[in-house]
Image (cartoon, rainbow over all chains, first blue to last red; front, top):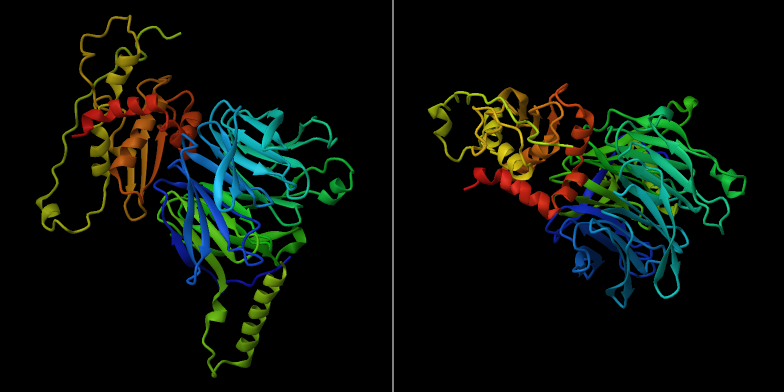
Length: 383
Length: 178
């Protein structure tokens, strides 16, 4: 776990991507881009019923819209997610369908349309292996689909349990466990003890009575190790959860998630999005147009881990921030999507490295600058 | 089962006398004028939304009170669904909160009224504005549920993609255009 010093960091806007004609709901970085000479790619989806694919290319290294995927979804495209292989993009829409797009030589073809939900699909998520997809809907259910040869998708199970619409589904980053969060204020954990069977069941419900949220839970995200989870809510808090996933990975049965910390007092309006970077920085996007970053704090560690705000970017957008996503390869790159219809690419930079090399600088501050530069290097070597 | 009007005998109130804006307000036409309580109230109170809708979708079987004219669309002000005092505006923070009073405690139209208020403000105020809509505390049987729904923007967005609902909202708001 990386620790960060107070202040001295800023989110620097690299570029604003314009093209959507309605609010941007969700973003997804293609995990197989931005490395080995492949230019970085991000997908965005919107209330304008389209998905846009953006690529950073050209001599100016600027972001451009490479493709607009339209005329497939009849209503708002609420959610998008790349498979881990980077070849498939799943998109969930208010039109009750999920579309699967395949990248064929730079063109995106809709190779499959998944029907079954009664109404709005609100979130889609691939598992780590890319052989399963989870979707959720206002119809209160979570569906798990198995990917079969020939772009066929078969519904393995329909998980019922939430009493209201399900806002988001997310697979655990290492195990085939599905997490769903809902308008009913709870997070539910779904798991099939026998990996081969279709015996999925709800292993845990995290509600207000066990330190959970008191209003709609909008999103959740995991740290890189997968032993911690952060959730965000309309109750204006972020909550951090922990589980003994090692025990579970070694086949020792279900390890329940327990509350370790609530971050309250930072947000004034609904928090729509939360994302944990691979190096431990939690980003939140909220209805107050701001982006905030949180890190584990060195202080007060007697009572277990605590978290502090690293920075707050006021007016990150002109309207609500609906999605914040860290780039999986370049860990200092953050993308945000907003009701204002734009996407912004940000770089997390240390302000101290910006200081001119003044000769009057005292030895002490040079040392601290060095320390921070090292920290920055340390951050990049965590890849 | 609903037989007849949801609120067959609404109390109709006199429109309040508007205070006249001072001439000073109009000295500089290009000055940025902050949005205030009265302006938001004017936007909303002119919305003639309630009766035409209720009448268009409910077959009424009970006799109406003599003072109630079903052909006349009453404004929200006349029905005291909203009052100027129930509107909080902070232009500096770009924030508006509207507290409305459904006509009766079990008025199933509360969500629809709230949705119309939200749409009206979405269309009238600058996009920088944050809008909270809620029913007045203690005035509705399912207050928390109505408030939650009205302030969940995903649900509102989905509702506004429903052509029937949009037609209805537009119909309710139509008299205020033009």
